[in-house]
Amino acid sequence: RQCSRISPGPVEDLWTPTDAEVDALENDLILQVARELEEAGQSPSPGGYYRQYAGFVIGGNRVIYVNGVDEPAIQRAPNPAHPFDWRTQAVQICDGGTITFGVEYDPATRQFSNFAFNGSI
Image (cartoon, rainbow, N blue to C red; front, side):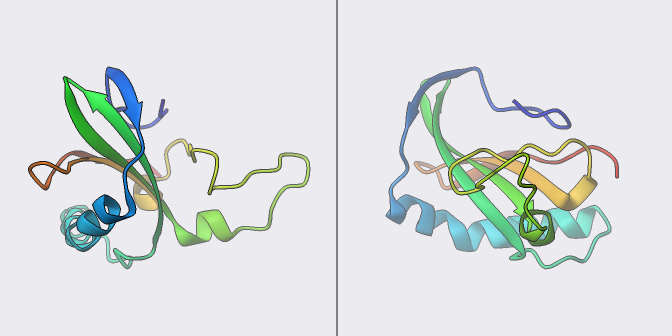
């Protein structure tokens, strides 16, 4: 679940994307993020996001959900009272605009859908 953008779903099942499937979407993802940033009137580097990938089955189709988080949000000094590892835990940031985004990718058609940045800054 996300608090500032639509979450994918309803999720019917889970699967693990292969390295090859993730590699196949990466170049197109950079172009998609660049377009979305330009439309939002922003100029951050489209490659400057850490990315998390999850395999969902939605509407009977396998979808790779990409959760992107701006590098500075991940690289902040850790809070010892709330240990967190972005490699194993889903990042959820409320609001923040272009700090985070989510998008669904269909590996069968190589198409992106439902791209959304978070709510207002």
